[in-house]
View 1 (cartoon, helix red, strand yellow):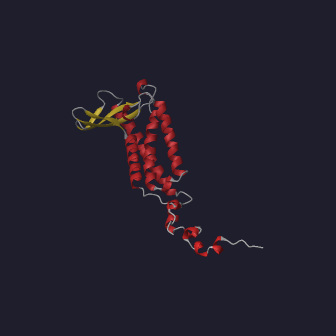
View 2: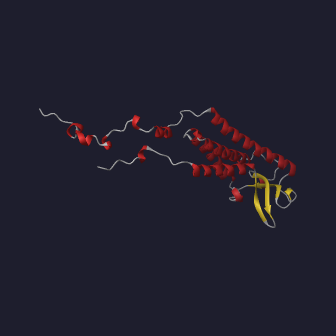
View 3: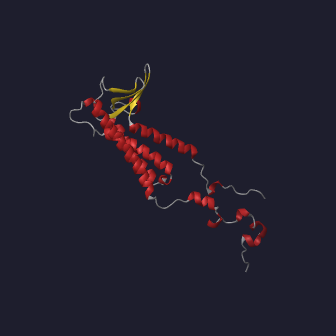
Length: 224
């Protein structure tokens, strides 16, 4: 009876080639293992960081809007107080649209998008592992604060029965920037500032993130 010989037995020199050697877990570089493994659980400090940024930012926005509108009232010709005459001031305004007043009257659409974005942030952070990156946690905490602050207004929680209907479900703005004689930046609030800061941090993260390395990028040895 003829015994079948294995490849290693029949071609001992060929079997010594590195591309025929089986890659095992122990042969994977330690640096590659470190890059592909993540902690199984998210530390409590990460939750604390995210919640503190989101909650403090949202409260700062809501309290500042409440105080400003209680002081200066609803938008009118007299609802302006200058910090630097002609340049920086406080002026109440109500925006029923999105950024720069785009989409006036589409409050329900923007409220729905805000809720979806908030849910997406939580899923990305705590289900898909983005919470392991502290810069991402900080950036998304800022974004969540901005979303929550403006969503509160869009859901109509701020106005009363005596508030004119034209202001219902609008976002309260109060920060005024102007470059004379006629260059006026649209009024904004702390929530808008938090959104801009969060977006800036996300851009910074994408520009500074090192390229990922995987085992699939290792090219086989084609030399004979």
